Length: 369
Image: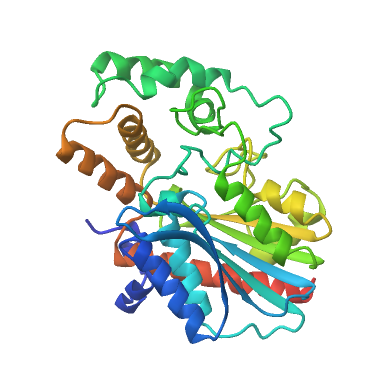
């Protein structure tokens, strides 16, 4: 199937394929090799679990620039496991661009924040936690997503595929709540159903505490911080939506527009995404409170939302109920991977071009502000 990108004249460069990988282990190897080719040290935070193919799992950190730089760009991949293929390719390509030229500036690459999900082609962590709902204050009352409770059993019924009656009930609720209302119910984040979708957890996940340790080591000295958190799955195919990811809608938003041009906002309703209960940027606010921050979520579209949600539902159903049919299980896992990681030249070329551009804009913004 020819993509809309191809029809818009995107020139496909097959060599870009070399930045992308088929497995987490391959992606990690390419990232580590790119760091080694630059003579940069790697700091590995190992998760004491085996990967899908028996490989080691880790969140790997590479710093390009002085430890006490006052200006820091942070590039994050793999918050949602399987979405890490995209972010990893961008990080590997950026390392290949060469050293940071700007003075008093460093780049921090945080590769595979959720290595377990990356390896097993899940969005969730080994705790079945959606990491972008896990950065909350667990000592306080947790957010209560009451609409999710109404649809939990409908989203993940006992049998798969779901019955016509099941899907009709969901359709009627979608009609009643509207598209955005239904999206909020499904994906805002919930803390009641441990086997459910977008579960935020009952305590900080391993990836949460590891990410915070990395920031404490590498980002406590900077005064100006710009971050890019790479995701996939929402929006038009191959288009990298630039989603403003700061709480301050004043000076930070103005700065984001200077750096990146048109940015969208989940709070203003201009984004394909919605507000989340505990996104990873909350850790940046907590651990790097000394810094003036300009944060972006770079969200690359893949396929229409019903297709992506359907793939997510099926994979969650498999995790919750299991399947006695190995062919069904394999098909569900592959469909989920495909939904968040199109393995096509035009998509990959668009991802790399936009990822590189946003990175260079970030460095330029840090230099000028």
